[in-house]
Image (tube, rainbow, N blue to C red; front, top):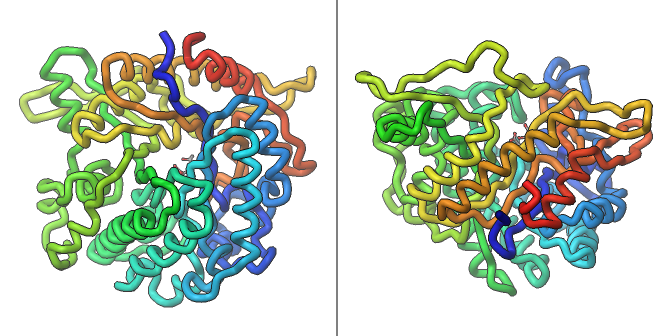
Length: 449
Ligand code: GCO
């Protein structure tokens, strides 16, 4: 059985993780440029200063994407390349790079899906209070407007923010990601609220300024809880757990998606955060709740629950359950239950904006990269996605994370997530076995699965 006609197949990346060239052509500093220089923050002191040198090798990389047969490619724009100080003066050199990249993609018949923000926040705005500054949503909307005015003659697919769970939570509460802050819960919630407002204002800016009909989405993490059996009570327990907010931290779905797609914060979350919740005018929720064309989801995790008299009860994995190099459990059914639960709740077509695994890849004596686990991962996960699509849950596309091995944030180059192997010393690229298998999946629109 194949996927619907026009289903988008590709992979995803983020500017800081692969571009390199962090001091070139007038780019300003981002919080990541500064954070990676702080001792002890990144595995082995590594940085993304060169990364995959994609800034210079984008044409070769687009050629490889064409070879695999991508019909779409999700990449992000570095805000401080466009606006070195975050607002104000526009850097023509930065815009010119994305012109070249977009033109190369279109030439290869690959549809660009642009993420406006994948975490490389302008350092000069951070100095001015960053996401805590009440002007921060407007700063983001100004940047969005400039990008859209410039690229929307050729680009019509946009994601606003990537994973607020991470840049708000890991960046401002846990301190593990840039800018490395450990704020209190109420300031963390304020950062989150401003980020959601920034999303809403950016959607308005895209709609108002796009030269082609824009299709706009958002890319939070979205991970379903899996019912341990198909008994209706277990399915209901899993659905409840998927959207529950029970902890005073960043790790849940509904806090970050309900305001955007339903226009309100989830009730249980409001109870959990209680009087740490910032005050804001009701009208903020109207700004946050803009009509969207699709909901992007980054899906990596899952867990099992079953019904119990005390509510959903987690069922632990059996000893020996498969895990990836990152120690993340392999749970293919998450690509069935995520589309099902999220489509039911939000009634928007979905795009899997990220899904993938890190593996212990190296070049074998025969000169090839045999990433058998990733080949199997693709098969198992995409079969589940196919099952969801067959059951009528609307999914428009799948972007594997990632197109090529790259800089995995605080883990540096330790984790290899790519379909394409990168030798970071010679910058040589090599299609892994998984890329060849993905090529066949794309060529048959999933029928070979
Ligand atoms: C995220 C980001 C990606 C990561 C990927 C693997 O989900 O953290 O969007 O930039 O590299 O998810 O961890």
